[in-house]
Length: 213
Ligand SMILES: [Zn+2]
Ligand SMILES: [Zn+2]
Image 1 (cartoon, helix red, strand yellow):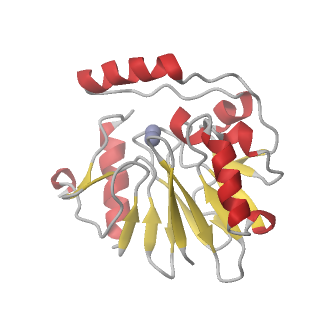
Image 2 (image 1 turned 30 degrees about the vertical axis):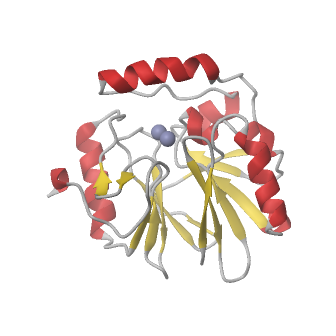
């Protein structure tokens, strides 16, 4: 089940194809990214084999491009994020760094939720299997964060639950609940994945943050 990273502005999206050719898109980037993603899906010839879009959580850099996708497949998000996606709003990030707060307020000048409501939004549940991909509920960064586990390859797509640096994985400075975040990262680590795909920074073989040890 190959995973393809698609680099967008500030963030990545992912295409997962199972061995039957069925495909899911993971996340939709910031506003403006949806069109590009649709083009990528078309170029790869997987648009008509796309079964669902799965969102790792409801921050604007992950669901912002969703209205532009114009896809007729289910849009799947954890129940805590459902209302945001459905109503075309974004979850406000809880930022634990003054520098990031300044950066985010600057970014917010250019990037706003425009309240475009979406149809075909469905709830994603812990333990659900979407075209061979396992959904694991990993709250902490947000209360609606999920991790996707591909059991055969034993790789995970963690969204923003972890960030990638050249020297390993680190915890995000944006989180709603630190204890939950640590618990979720421990749970991901307990799967012993061979590879960790992150939405921000460098994906790679995991080197876990010291905080979870
Ligand atoms: Zn986020
Ligand atoms: Zn993000």
